[in-house]
Structure formats: structure tokens, C-alpha cells
Image 1 (spheres, rainbow, N blue to C red):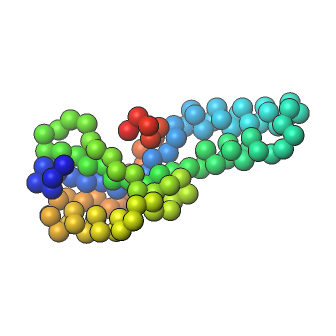
Image 2 (image 1 turned 60 degrees about the horizontal axis):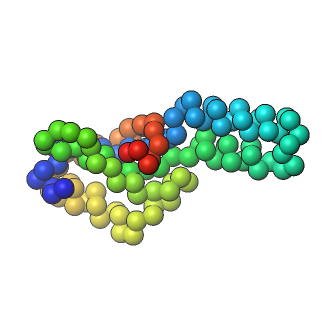
Length: 112
């Protein structure tokens, strides 16, 4: 999408849905309590899934429709795209409205 086709850009944080986080924690708890888990690995995985958040940009086009997402951080907050700091600078230089206040959204990244 070209800059002149962008209506607005928002900074977003994607988390797994609340129901998924609760279900994953409950299953990990049952696994530990049932004695089937010989380690704390299920609980650790559940905690990672519950706290995972991916940083990205939500780009809305002037024509409407579904927004485009660019995910630039991993689940622990580390930037995974080289020189990504230049992208917000380019968006601002193109005078596209850019909301830097993080908007939290829930979903699975594969469906975004």
C-alpha cells in the first residue's frame, strides 16, 4: 500500500484471546495436578501463552475494507525486522495520521 492510500496508522499490541489464555492455564493446571506432568513444562508454556504480546502496525486504507497488519516484534517484545525504526519515521514524513498510543487487540496472528 502506498502512503497516499493510507487513511491512518495505529500502533497495536496483539494478545491471544482471553478464553484461550484461560483454557490453556486450566489445562496446564489439570496436567500438573493429575500427576501426568513430570515437570513444570506445561505450566511454563501456559504462562508464556498467557503473557505473549506481539507489537505491530494497523494500517487503514482510504477505501475502507480490512486493515493491513505488520507485526514487528516477537512474543517477548523484541523487534524482529531490521531497521524497523525507519518505518514510523517514513509514515510521519508522508503526513499520514499516526496514533502512537498502543491499542490492544485480541486474536490469533495467523488470522490477522
